[in-house]
Structures are given as C-alpha cells and as structure tokens.
Amino acid sequence: MAMTDQEILTGLGEIIDEVAGVPADQVTPEKTFVDDLDIDSLSMVEIAVAAQDKFGVEIPDDQLKDLKTVQDVIDYVRRSGA
Amino acid sequence: MRLTEGSAGARILAFGDYQPSRVVTNDELAATVDTTDEWIRSRVGIASRPIAGPDETLADMAVAAGGKALAASGLSPEDIDLVIVATCTPEAPIPNTAATVARRLGISAPGAYDLNAACAGFCYALASASDAVRAGTARHVLLIGAEKLSQWVDWTDRSTCIIFADGAGAVVVGPVSDPADAGIGPVVWGSAGDLADKIYIPDRNGFIIQEGQAVFRWATTALHPVAKQACERAGVDPTELAAFVPHQANLRIIEAIARRIGAPQALVADDIVTAGNTSSASIPLAIARMLERGELASGAPVLLLGFGAGICYAGQVITVP
Image (tube, rainbow over all chains, first blue to last red; front, side):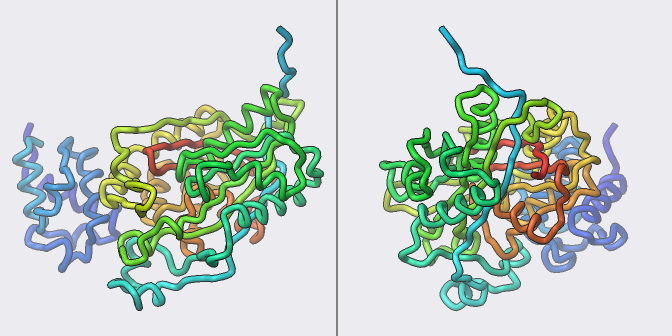
C-alpha cells in the first residue's frame, strides 16, 4: 500500500532527527535542508541511505542535489513507489 | 614434506607510535586555499594535522614507531623474524621499506615486505602477521603502518589537502600457547575493485583524487555489516566492546558507522581531530594514544575497521596488551 505524504513526512522527521539532530517537529514540508535545517551535503547522503532502509527507495547522489526541500524528498519517495 | 609447527594463536604484545613535530592548523591551510577552520571541522572533523618535514622520510617515521613498539614489548631485535610495513606511500617501488627499517632497527635478516591495502593496510597486515605466527612461519612480527601522504597531496586542492597527514604506528605480534589467550580475532576482509576510481592517484606525478560524497555513501552503507561480522566471528558481542577504532578517515564517517554497530558503550576513537587521516597508520596511532591516556584496560576487546582506496576493507577484534 502506498504511503501518504504524512507518513513519509513522519518517517523523514525520524531520520533527520537521528542523522542531523534536528527535532522531528521542525521538519515541515516547506523547509529547505541547507538554509532552514542547516543540513549539509554529507548529512543529505546519510538521510538518503537511511531513507533507502526505511522506504525502500534509492536516491542516487546525482538526484540528491536536486532535492532542496522536505517536500521535494516526499515527492521523490512517493513517485518512486513507496 | 615436513611443515612448520604453528602456535595456538597470536596476540599484540605492544604498541608504538610516531608523529612529526610540525603541526599544520586549519587556519594555516585557510591562508593558502579557499576554506575555513569551521568548514573543515564540520565536514571532516580535523582541527590540526602533523606533517613531516622535507627531510623526514617514511622510513624515519617507521623506524621511530617500530623502535618504540619493540622497546615496549620487552623483546630484542633478534627475536623478530618478520617485518611488515603497511604503506601506500613508499619512497619508491624498490627497495621496499620493510628491509630498510629492519636494518635500521638492528633486526638481522628477517622476512621483510611492504603491504599496500591503503587505509585498510594495518588490518590486512595484522591478519597476515597473526596468520604467520599461527602457522609457525614467524614467531614474532614487527608490523608498522607508516605514511607520508603529504607528498602525494596537491596542496592547492582544498578537497584533499585538509584531510591527509603523516605518521606511523606499530605493533609487535607474538604467539600464545593457549587459544583462550589469543588476542587477534578472525579477520573479515574484502575489496570492491569496481569502486577503484573513487580514490586514486592517476600517475607517478599525480596527487590523491577522491570523490568524497561517493566514498562517504559507500562507507556509511557497506561497512557496518563488516564490523558486525568481525565481532560475530570473534565470538564477541558488540555490547561487550571496550572501544571501536575505525580508520580515521573522516569524523562524520566514524560517527555514522559507530551509530550502526550496536555498541553504545564502546569508546569511539576520534584521533583524527589532531592526527588527520594517516591511512594505514591511523588505527595503531589512535590506540597508542588511548593507551597513553589510560582509556583501555589490558585484555579489553577492541574492534578495528580499516577501509579505503582499492576499495579495500578489513576488520577484526583484538584484545589490548
């Protein structure tokens, strides 16, 4: 069964909390990773790796750089069939 | 045919270390390349790194560390019958470093070879030393991880010159008669030659080139299962580990792997902060410093994990001498 945006957001919040120490309640769809959440490119790789474990969706490095906001990741995960 | 008589197991008898006295700070690098202290600390975790002087050779550093380990072991040079130098930065392909180092330490006519598995070199060589002692082809092995990476770094390339450093770390490995006293667990080693182009030196006049993000992804994905398997083969649960000493590649990689091995109580080596990335020297250097600070009790189980160019990787559990 496909995950809803809210389910993906919740999962993503848990990942970002663990990887970057940003509290999950601050992870909202409109936030940008670099400017709003202070997450750098290495943390983005860790988030991608954790997202693969959690959602079963692979996010390669060349796609990763285009995912600027939380909503971008939610859309990517949903599009890729989670 | 008659075969050698082996021993029940092998253990590390002593550690030794050497680092150049010249220390290069992040601010010094920021004066010559476009970077900042804050950026380097947050991305790789390094505050400063020792860099060899122009006249300080790889063999000089290896001799200094090896001599300390030998003295700490209580053995004499004549007790050593095999010398291994793990390095990816020899002065030249021939002669090898090990024979020169052996001569300078007064070790007479030992087996002597260099081993190149880049940043996994120490763990590969430790497995080889342990196997030689167990098989009876050597009784006491002097193993030195030594690197002069500064001569293979482009000091105008801000992505690599902030990372690599110089130094040497050594151990003496010897036999035990009771398997219960063995202090070097089974190695879990491997390679991924399909990723050879992620860390390489293009030719003899070239410098280290690294695809940082790809290496980071590989290291944070592929290595924790190797670490867990090394514990399993040694019969040591990760929760029993006193310390986790991975190759000091990048503090962010170290922390990411540490989170995934299920050893929350283990002390995690962070020697990279002041040692930089010294490839095959980083693991023995880190342990030598932990021993100096009294952080590791004799007999405590410690997980080692080497990984780097090749890509080569290896892990094993050891006990502290």
